Length: 272
Image (tube, rainbow, N blue to C red; front, side, top):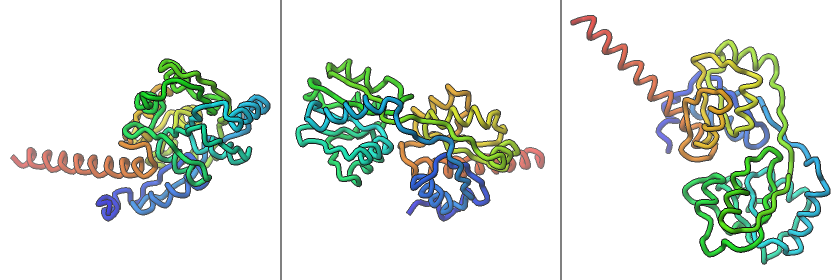
């Protein structure tokens, strides 16, 4: 059992959850176990790729066995495969960037041949790519705003890499009530789950109050958030929703303890 849950360290804290759907509902439920009041306000959404024909052609060649590897970077891409009813041939192996993406593939009925163990990111996948598999063709369907880290990294290893835009990431305006609650400090923490979310937080809600805690889901997202102009207070150890919420709870416990110690020290010095 997680010891932080029994302490309810986030009791009364309103926490902005920037994604909806099953993910947002799951995070909200997890936050409530720590005593928090989740505020689900999706800040990004996904739309069809602009060049639908290019995506369709790439997926057809995938089904024909033209690629040795298919690399999937998000559950959203899995949704695209499902919507296109893509059948992946046995000769094509599948790599997933992270356990969450791997789980989405498995749930959709696709096998997963490779997931990086120590770093659930594009850099981690490149770093841990099997040394025996550096020859062959790789298809990477990603967001239209995906950074070239993965494509460039695998190409450097010697693989023949093809990128295709699988979907578009678009910003979603938050309601005026949510924006007002952030500006007033009523929302005490903001979860940042991607660089796209970080840029929306900066564009729609900045400047954040000094006391607002920003929690990022992993080092890469923290780097993107800082690049967007946000101050990051919490970085989840693992790139997972549970690690993100646990990291926020641990931060609050630690800093509440530090504040209590400081007050105690001040009182002792005042009595001496």
